[in-house]
Amino acid sequence: MSEPRYGIWSPVGGNFGPLNTPDEPMNASYERTRSLVLEAERLGYVTTLVAQHIANPRSLDLEQLETWTACAALAEATETIEIIAAIKPLLFHPAVLAKMALGIDAISQGRFAINLISAWFRPEMERTNIPFPPHDERYRYSGEWLQVVRALWSGEKVNFEGEYFKIQDLSFRPFPVAQPYPRIYLGGASEPAQILAAQQADVYFINGQPIADVRKVIQQVISRPRSLPQPVRFGLSAFVIARPTDEEAQAELERLMALQKLEEQYKLSVAKGVDKEAVMFQLFAKNPAVGGNGGTAAGLVGSYDTVATRVAAFVDAGIDTFMLQFNPFVQEMTRFAEEIMPRVRHLQKVA
Image (tube, rainbow, N blue to C red; front, side, top):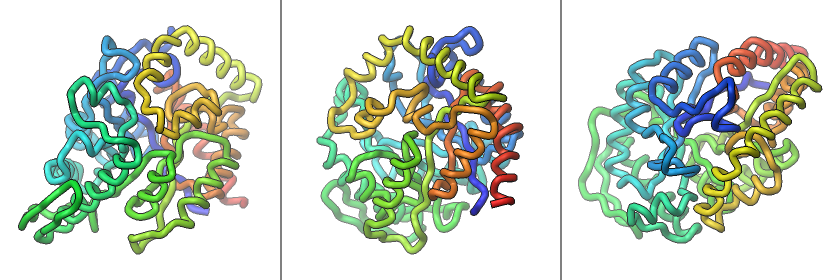
């Protein structure tokens, strides 16, 4: 059993779980994200995911950090942590994005990756008059987009003509520091997302959900045709509540649930903008939780021993990377590093 990789969601849209708590006021600034990522690096986290929206889905009145400028700055500010920039292919031509990614790859000395998501928030596109094709077509578009990006990262001269893109005699220098190219993560819960992940992704992100469902998703993806030589790996999103006892953790979950309920208007705002074909929101409705992208539905709520045992079980099921959310962030991120990471290592040694 390999040691898991732990990462944090950068708080580009504010907080995870309740947006405002007495311990964690709303803050989506670059200064806060930089501070958190530097502390995560010091604590032993190895990766961070910087989500992408051009406007905060919960309200236009809320701040939203821009992803790619933030990632370039984080690449300069950090030394060891992997920086994953989410990317919605509808927002960037693949040649432009491939070149931007190579720039951050160079700044970070090979610590940069992308997380491809095919978009679910309609108003973001409609308000800017950016075309928003139907769900399955977005994944066809994303698949071709990814082919172009990977080809340009190869350094070879690219000639490509597909349904959406045409590239003529184009090659990029310098070559990527990360070899053979920056790592490609992919998110999405639908069948087209699984098919694309099986074909072209290095890591498939699974939204937080019970372990039995996670096992089923992993089996579905690895049973599909693969176009890359190395097997696809798996990541899991989760919101963590760890305490000395299960009872204390459950009480904290209930407290955060109550605070989150007070901000129901933000949840309703997001719901109004969701593409009805987006499968992940059907999963969220099935598994109510604190946090984003499945949050506490992954079950990492309980005593230190309970949470560590569940992390180890997910690793045994095939999860390689845990992308974690906390509230209050620094306090709980530190608690996880000091209490859960060592316990998981011990469990793996005795397994």
